[in-house]
Length: 465
Image (cartoon, rainbow, N blue to C red; front, side, top):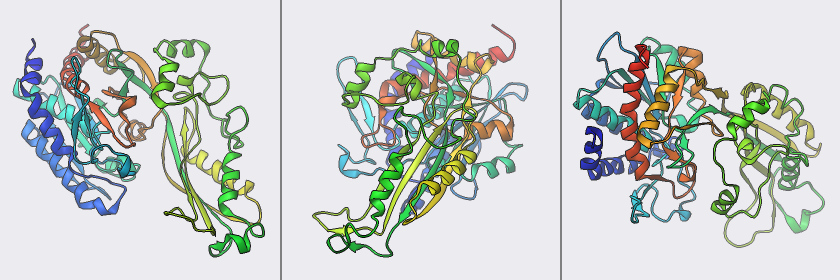
C-alpha cells in the first residue's frame, strides 16, 4: 500500500469528522441571515490550511465575502498550481424534503463493499471537494512530496455569481501568478468510469415580473374581466419553446457553434444508459430539442428553463384571489460562442415584445458567465488524465459538462490561465437539491488522486514522458 493510501486508511474517521465540522457551518451566501456564518466558514477553511502547512494564509477582502488565500512555494522554478474552490453553499430549502437536517451531516447507505455517503448541504458542492485538496496538500507537505508550488483561491460567492471576483483578480494579479487552475467543482460519469470535464456551458440568469391590476382582487368579483398576470406569465413562458423543443427567441442561436459529426461521435463514446437515467429520476419519458441525444441536450446545446415561479396566494387552504403580480426566475445555459450579455438583452427585448398590452413587464438580469472549452493537448490535461488512470485503474473519459462555472472564463481573460476541471462527485449527488450527498469513496479517492496530478504535472512541465 502506498504512503497516501496508508494515510487515508489510518485517518479515515478523522477526515470524516473534520469534513463534518465544515458541513455544520450554514454558509449560505444568497441569504443575508447567514452573513456571519459565511465569514465563519472562511475562517474555518483558513485554519484548516494553516494546519495543513500553508504559508501566508489570509482572508483577502473583496466587495463581498472574503477569498481564503494560502500558499506553499517549494521552488521558484517549479510550476505553480492554483487551487480554486468555494466555501459558500446553496440555500437548503425546501427543508421538509430533507431526510436529515441539511447542516447536521450524516453518513448513510453503508453496505458491504460500499463505504456510504455523507449527507449535508455543501457535501459535494463544493466543501467536500475543496476539502479533498486541503487534505491532499497536507499529506504532500508532511511527506515532502510536493513537487509544485501551490496557491489557494477559495471564495465565498460562487453560488451567487462571483460578482466581486473580476475586480478581485484585477487587484491581485501578481499574487495569483501561476501556471494553471485546478478545480474540483465537477463530477465523474461513475465511480467505475472516471471522467474529466473539458467543457462547460455558460449562463444567463434573469428574473421577470408581470403586473396586471394595482392590487390583488377578488377572483369572483373581477375574474374574467381583468387580466390575470399569473395566466399571462404562463402563456408567455410556454411560448419560449417551439414544438421541436427549440428556443423561440429571435437571434438566440446566431452564435451557437455546431459540433461536427466527428466531434459528436467522440462525445458519444461516454457510456450512457437512458433507461437507468429515467429510472433514477422516476420519469416516464424525456423531452428536449429534436435531433440531439439526451447527453447532447444536457451538454452541447443551449437551454432555457424556469427555475422558480410564484404568484398569488400559496399558503395553506384556499384564498380566492386574482393576483396583481406574477414572477419567474429563468436561466439559460449557453454554449460556445454565446455572449451572456447579448443573450440577456435578446431575452429582455423578446419578452417585452410578446407581452400583451394589458400587462406591464419588467426583466431584471441577475448574473451570468461565458461558456468554456478546455484543451486536451496540454501538460495540465495530460497530468490529470494520467493521475486518474493511476488511481481509478481506467483512463478517464473527456466529457462536456452541462453546468456553469463562470469564473473559468474569467481566469483565462484576466490572468491568461487555463483550468483543469478534475471533479470527484457524481451527477446523482443532488447538488442544489434536498438530500445533497458526497460519496465517501469519492472523497477518499480524490485525496489519493490529487498528489498524483502534482507528480505528473511536474514531470510533464520538465519535459519528461
